[in-house]
Length: 231
Image 1 (cartoon, one colour):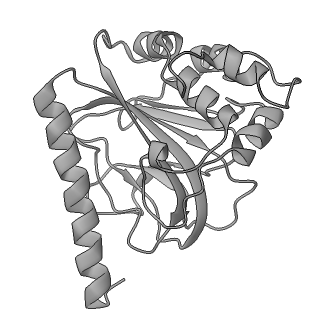
Image 2 (cartoon, one colour; image 1 turned 120 degrees about the vertical axis):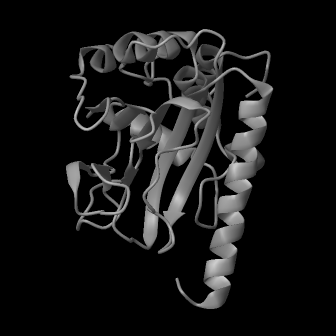
């Protein structure tokens, strides 16, 4: 986003005057039930109202390939930028800190965007150790079948041993506190799967560098797997 424009001025400059100034329903996040089995997580249906979903989808980054991407390197519209600004705002940080009982003061944020899923996606993992809280917001109109639905897992090696299955439905939010057993993943799925992932990270340069190296390693492994014909 333009450093001289906040989300309110960005929205005022668009052709969508009916959009609310507050794009996020943070009150619904605050009221959501924190689940603790098998680790701390929550789900917030309707975190974005439908008119907001439609506006963000219309300005969604034009990403032609699968994988989590840096949205700033792709063409996108102003409403998407306003959404990201609010998602990474102090108000959102404070709501998450209060809900999960963690101190996010000084934490950095990382935002990635996905448009498509490929068959090498959805592997079971806990998220990188540098992350404190991870947030997922979905932008898919309807969902059929188990493939691509996020599972909150009890095991590091059994995708069928899950406590909850979360469809990636438009406007819904899922957030969890990262720990050594925050296993999650989904059954293989190939096709459109729009999602914004935002994490609050430990405030250290080493953590940021380590996370970037880990993402690079994941991309390289997928290239090797695809080249071997195992996808």
